[in-house]
Amino acid sequence: MKIILTHEVSSLGEPGDVVDVKDGYARNYLLPRNLATPWTKGGEKQVEAIRAARASRAVKSLEEAEAQKAQLEGRAVKVKGKTTASGRLFGAVTSADVAEAILAAGGPQVDKRRIEMGGHIKALGDHTATIRLHPEVLATVKLQVVEA
Image (cartoon, one colour):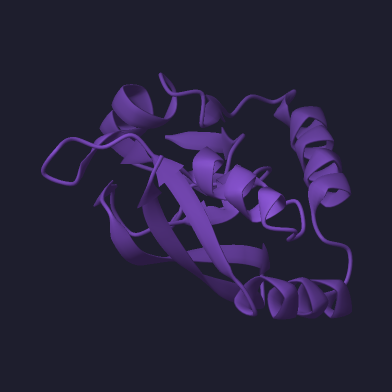
């Protein structure tokens, strides 16, 4: 099935990309979560609109992305969460929590959709998150999950 991605899907593509996937994957995962729309003949206008929106949100130049990477990797970010007596978090640390913590720590504003944590963070301690600032620039941020 041919679809148009409306959000970034890792290992598949970025918004505005037209990809061919298996019918079940599109019907059961991508379409219900609004990550994609079916391809139609009139979809070319939609593809251009998605690409224009993506370009306006993206970091414009490689130099800006490198500067943001230097800012992000130079600091440890503290994320606060409510915990049980045993030290486990109620729920998990989300990418939105990480984006807010980076901003509170004096870092640049980061889109939560660009943050990858490699699994759920459900315990106190030190963790890492990867932020895709540019297609060629990845920043690794050290997270310290502490009790609120």
